[in-house]
Length: 341
Image 1 (cartoon, rainbow, N blue to C red):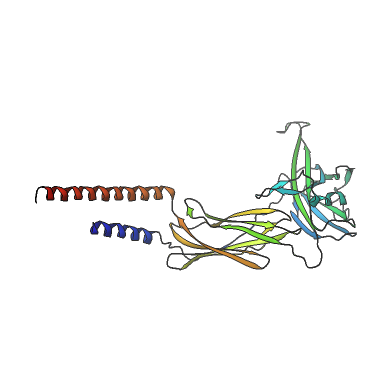
Image 2: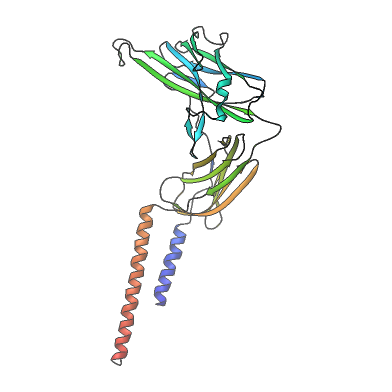
């Protein structure tokens, strides 16, 4: 039995040594994906942050560029913008107190900066929409003017800006004569009605480092609640050490972070470490918001599922073999005592 105990101890120690990570120190900087134009139309900027004041007027512009090879007809319009759920599913239909700004805003065209073909052909005041021509490779500057009422609510206002082009199909084309091909692209304007130095308020509800990683990158996550009326940004970085305490991976804070909109709760999940190997790691996750860092440390086991199953089966077989051997030895001793040997 002592020999078997030594064998089992050696197996466990050997397994631990096998799982010690051997990756070199590396760095990973989080980068947000920026979506640009598609289907022949591009908009910039895709997100616009401005400040507004009650009783004042704010103005600006979006650049709309044709990337197609044919002249098009297009329209620009405003839509209410909000998000639903912790996964931030975009909603461009629901009207809330946070997107009243749509009613305060009118669209127009900057004739001086825009190309010669950028002419407004009609307006639809009810839908807050302007129709215009868009020549191939031409830039149009669609302007907005926001007349903020004196009783405007404090905090954030959100509105979606969309451009939709309409291309008439030609005879012999894939779309067919008279058939319309429509493509739509959008941007978001976020307006802040701030009082004094108020930066808002937030609460870090949960942080998580996965205990098991069977396949793919290590994905950490956290949940943040915005309990105020202003947007704020959160950021995350990681420090990973092996069983001996050696730092083998370190990420840095992203340049912009992740926005948490007013009066919402956001679940943030990122593939934080892609090139990890099989091993046992001590992971330190640091989330930063309002200039303060919040850290947790957890152990993570990175191992393919098939290998884990194989090891468990091997351990189970070994334990059963030990139990069977012990039972057989006990029976043999009893027989020896029984027959006086």
